[in-house]
Image 1: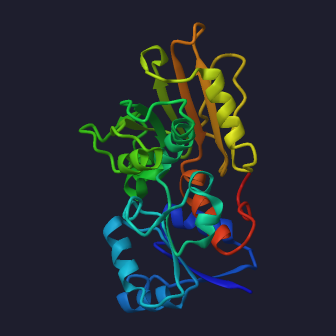
Image 2: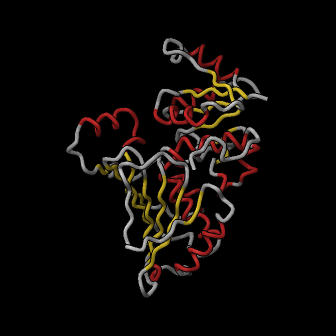
Image 3: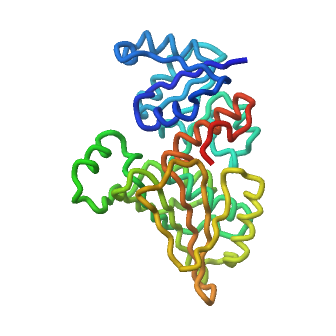
Length: 308
């Protein structure tokens, strides 16, 4: 039976990529509002309440407003904003971490942040296994393509070829930090330093580990083995092959994709290690993750429509 889907905020980058992944799929029919009606509150209210599934690709306040407009007990919601990622009553939409059945049964799902996806995929399983301490002050270094920053940042990078690197959130307190801390069960907020590079898409998240100074931490080989086993059945998250030449490249020509690759590197004596996640910030970091959750909630194979 065909399920109706309304993408509220479907003209933005995340919404457009979700639409691409649903194109030609007979399991869903899209409810669309034309330009004249998509900002009309009553038209939106009608679409929100007429849909089996709603995917919110909106700023936080607008996402909260949209949820408040839903006045029935049948519309199920996936929110791609930050608004509900640590909110009570919302399921965190990372099936590999939260549980596939938990996401499939949920009525309110919050899509993970792109940076958070890489950090949580690496750290949460290792903390749960006791291979990393929950009370360590973790540092997260990450770079992303500019497409995750919205229309204004996309325009800025595409019009100013002199920008080689953009650091932001310099006063810390980035909006992804609460979900990183919560999903990994950490007692201390991680110190997160994001940056944007002149590539349209792609993301690398790094977590340096001074293992010799970390009480109770396991070794890099055990971490690598645990992550490989933890994600062993996943068609989306996998361990990447260690590069023979000792370097990794994030290419400007990167094709869209919904896979997430993880790596564990270490120095010769094992006193230091580095966890690395590589993903498409618009794939598993945004639109692909939303479609994965939608598939599960609709009782479909989780990879349907994904680019793997």
